[in-house]
Amino acid sequence: MRSPWAREYVRRPKEYIWGTDPSPLAQELSALLPPSARVLDLGCGEGRDSVFFAARGLEVVGVDASRAGLRKAERLAREQGVEVRWLHGDMSRVALDGPFDLVYSCGAIHYVPRRKRARLFPRLQALTPPGGYHAHVVFTDRAIYREKGEVIDYFAAGELGRAYANWRVLQCEEQMIPCAQDGTPHRHSVEQLVARFRPATEIHEWTPSSQ
Image 1: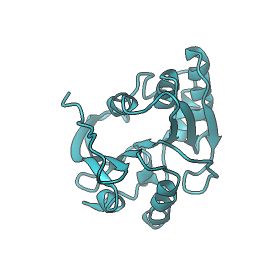
Image 2: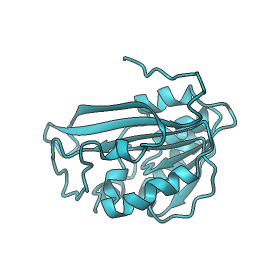
Image 3: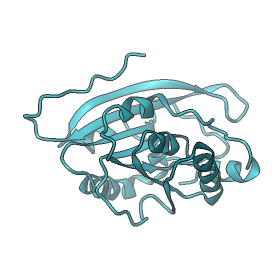
Image 4: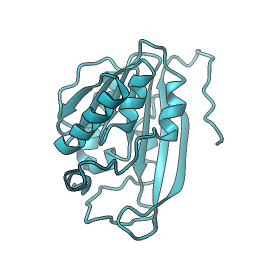
């Protein structure tokens, strides 16, 4: 699979392509975690969500395949006065030192080929203690738009949910999101999942924001 964003990070080193504000999902998830929690941000890109989690007092590891993206992420962390451990490498192979109370990815895991994802999800789940969360946003094959020559192994309907069949799935919903990063207005079909590894007898529930 091939992501075009590493080239964009090199071409636009002073500009944050995705902005510096955290995603709405990251903001919601941060409220679930205690101050001592550890977060793994896969495909962290320019670091907006990693830096946000760190600013909330969490211990964060950000992983990305783009060195240029990580340089921008490091700069953002310095500007915000927070520390994040940045790891360069392929998320399906990089060595990870768990446990992590939240494993998070926003628009990244669909760049991992399906055959590798079959091994990646169990590996990530093994790094998560009881009570820990996983949250992912992935592109699905409901609406395909190839942006800047990217090559994606789109998630099929139900694929992400099946990877968490033994977890408590708190949210799993499809959305159509607008985009114009290549200069042409278009939409991507995405699936957003939040799941928790926990005993079924635990009674506290998270209700996702309706906003």
